[in-house]
Image (cartoon, rainbow, N blue to C red; front, top):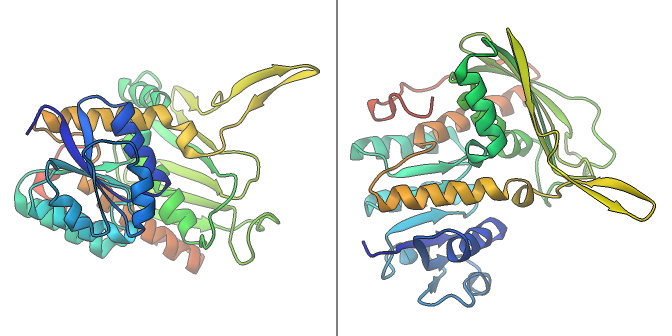
Length: 341
């Protein structure tokens, strides 16, 4: 491997383009070697101004491009399984955006494929684990000064949902972040899901069940509730409060800038995740590049991506049935013993 890590970026939409910018201008030790997107004009626009980048419509052609040492997958979720398996077949380290694979069967195939290799190659992009506030909350919980966690209260709000966003996606796309954050913060698996439907907001597209109230149970008896509201209309808000036996801790209250103008003052509320979690994405990609150059894989792994897919699928079934749905995970392979917990 050369001095700079050559990265193939799969997907040149808003997330992929932001990662291309990050690799080229923010994160040291890496360069963008190839970009792939079905829309060649979008790929060319994302790679504009970068030297030595090849542009492709076929993701596997990007993996085989000269100078590619690693892969960053930022394509839509349904394309992730094929891309991960192709990267594994070439022995390429991967940073894969969430969801790792949207459906549990595909996620299980990816986990089994990596387990057969006998070594980790993939890190999954649950970037909240790299956010300064989440890291502080994790340290407090692990330190034990607050006592045993009893509940997590979570809020996940978006200004508006993209066209075609479905009621199921509130859980398997939006709440997937809370699923992983809860598992990580508490150090235990989620065992059951219940979803309640308040009256839908007038701001939600016709037929979309928004907001939703999602309740998770954990293996040691804690409860995690999530208010997910993807058409709140005013900003992007993420909050989490851990209630423990000897105290509580809350994040997300000051995720805004106070602006003073003639006649008054007010708070600016972030309008999307790329703003709210910009530092977390920078830290995540920087850590991935550094670890990859050192021959290591760190951070959330394929087991975490698989678990999130299974829990999300149970949540969708709970939404559809109106009942409590148990989470059934496959046995955890030895490769993943002791990580991400």
